Length: 99
Image (cartoon, rainbow, N blue to C red):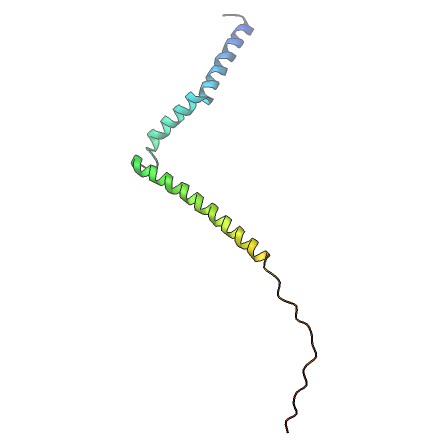
């Protein structure tokens, strides 16, 4: 057996390297590979359908943003409307006597 500190330093360095590999690109690639074996593709659809679904997701996001902008513009227009004219209280006109 070696000395205690040398063995500890070796095991610590091996652990740090292993952790770096698992948390780095190798770990992400391994995770993607495992996920692809468990769930092939998005909902198991062909590649061209997946691309179309991604485009639809992008379009849905854009439409949502445009709806928010439209609502904001409507609120701004509603706030800038001129207030109703103030009616002046005038005395009633004399009515013609019938009779």
